[in-house]
Length: 126
Image (cartoon, rainbow, N blue to C red; front, top):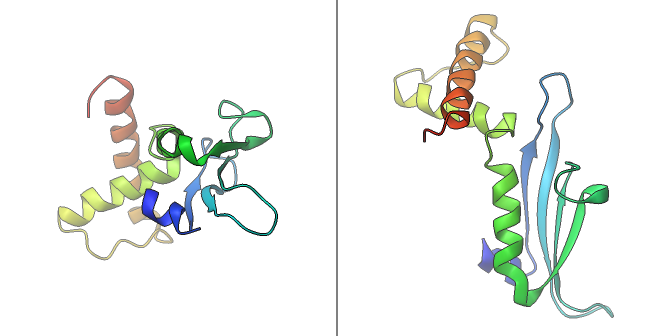
């Protein structure tokens, strides 16, 4: 991830914490020298627990902190999108290769697994 940022790259993950809200994005960007700006890392996460306004800037020297803050939010049990993808991957590995989230039965299967994963994480499991 650091290499992507150092090349001026952009990484984005789906992010949401409530079932009833729209899916948003969490993003981390690397801005290199040029165009009159100092090099910096910008993290944007639509979560008030991250930063007021959802945006935080880091110096290049703080790239490890920026990456850590970003991954802490996008890979957390609170990010329902991450848990959904994790649930789908587990189900795929168990032989469910044709999951269709528009199919109510498949959606229920994924959501049940997602809830199980969230429960495990919140109770201290891995």
